[in-house]
Length: 485
Image (cartoon, rainbow, N blue to C red; front, side, top):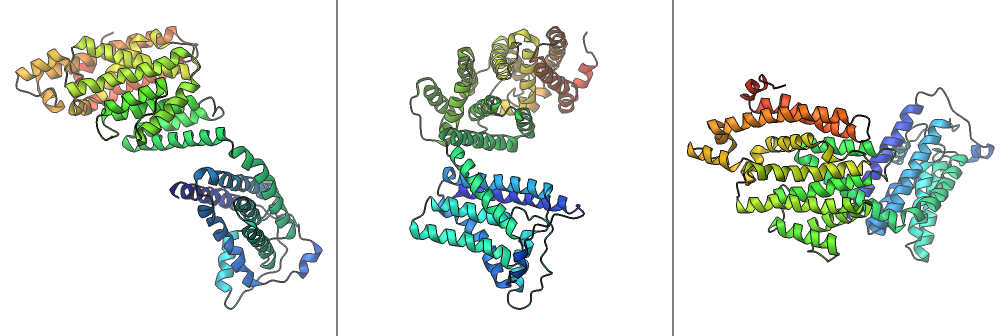
């Protein structure tokens, strides 16, 4: 019910925007076409039929109870969306001017009629979406109903079509066009949407959208990434699916390992079960994380036609897993081991991004940029990582900090010590050198597909070095004045 209600709510918002937008635009038109037929002057105005007219909302709401799963609801919802778009285009291209005389309503049916008239807005006439929606509902519901119910839905749709004439909201041409629109769209849309491949694609896209929303709620930068992913998908939606799926899969795994997405029990057990499922097809534990991650992982591996790229995905998950292991053991690694871990992480992750983007450059061709990305990751999340036990401060530095009576696992205490500040300043200067070398490396790659993506990463790290980190640690402004050449 929650999922079918979400589809219904999504359609309602879509309809209000498209239908209302078309009415607003045509409000600037000077006039419209006359489509009234001679016999229509004999159709009486019967305000009480406004009750039948507004019953169309009830007819649509029945879909929540007739279609008990989102898969069954989706063809109906997408058919209504398609009819809304086609109808709006007709309203804009073929604006119609009604020929009915002015309607005056008094008595018991006044409020009902005014509500019906408000629903219709102005100028949206040919085709009648009221009739189209009613006929679509009858066509869709008939497939899941017995003989009596089928007859009832058919008569209900016919009554709604008649009501549009009897309350003088539409002309006969509008009614006929609405019925034909419903028949044509349902015949085209329903079979296509019911295909297993289409339904699975929708399910995967809905998972990606949900995960991107959750990431963005945690930090705004993920919202920006989501916008970039969708922007890059325009015009090449199918081809860009592996980028959307890949990001969501790896970020979800990272969030579980980091504790940003809580799970019951030890995260490593979930990741190990996920790896077994992806590598051998063995079933995993019944959990929201495993169901989501295994779905995204399978799709990603299927989308990657290069066996090397598929192995990179699994290797990256194993590399990320190592960070969780050292958190559990509360290990302080030396600088060399930390750099190796960061290098492996960004070599694999950037390499996958370049592969997904069909780039002709490899991550290994920009080693300074990979090292700069590792530096940025450490410094950007230093406070949070230290708090959760991911110690990216070298063991010898931590020992010096402890010797002065400070706790190297607390960022404020770390920066209060001379050894801690000296390490941060030296890392800051090292990043400057890495960025300068990275700029030279990217210049040598100029003109090759994928270099623009690497330059985007470079600019992001450069901005963090120049502005964001000095704001967090003001003492680095002095270090930036000593910028090496």
